[in-house]
Length: 187
Image 1 (cartoon, rainbow, N blue to C red):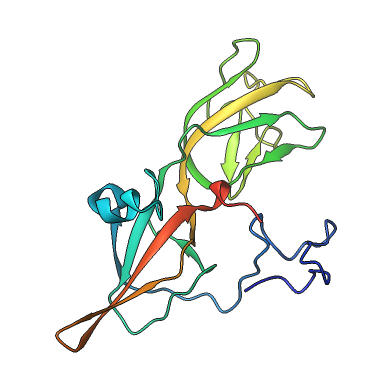
Image 2: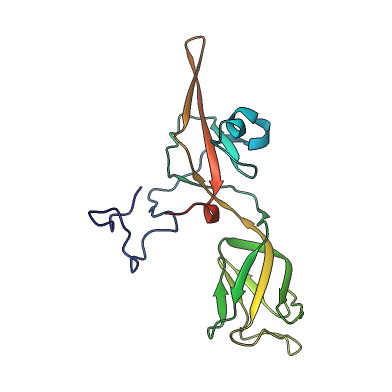
């Protein structure tokens, strides 16, 4: 749903902590069963400009209704493209875009590489650099250092376009929903 913090011109309140980057809030989460395919199997969507390579197509297998702006989180981790480019904060860790399950690579602007479980931990949507039982050989980037972490995680998708209802011979065969990764969608 669109966040209630919008003013009469449709602008979001920059201090609101309820909405995500798309300006949406999410309530009453539940699991649905669906078929998910890569958009490149649906050339009609790419040719008409509705979808781009990297998008996905979801077809609910149940009576659940998926509408524009709904957030979908797959129940299996996927690689997060190029990863997150971050700047080391003063805090014990930094915020990631998605809930991470396993690091693929982590390194800083000076060419230093970091190892999961020794130098950092992944906890939900955070990379944690300081924790009580950190091994003595563990290191971390200096505060202010730029670094990148590429990881597998639970990618969040947004129903990007108006779902297409499909009817075949008078029978409802469910909708076809174009999904776009949340970090690619802007408010």
